[in-house]
Image 1 (cartoon, helix red, strand yellow):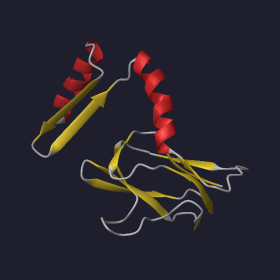
Image 2: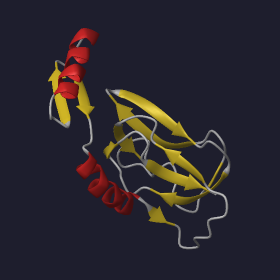
Image 3: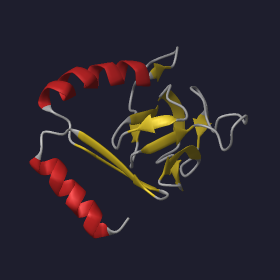
Length: 139
């Protein structure tokens, strides 16, 4: 799909009452969305409740949020059937792989921005995440 078609689709969504449009052409899928005010206020608390698991020890002193840099499918493990990269309570080093987000057949590695211990982690695996979704916290 060329950029002029994508721009046309973006303009169409901007002018219409549509809040989401997904178009697939050959092997390329483009998803354009615009949350409405009513949906955003209702959906946001539900997303936060289902996507975060807390460590049992739970004392948040200075934690660093790891968020999704792109929209795509989140993978907690390097391949199906293999153990996840990290779990709640694991100590991680800066630059260590935490997740992979698959977006348009490109695998984006999500690395730890700092050393520490995983205190919170999303329960989403092999499902879509939005840009900015909280994936984990490192204390």
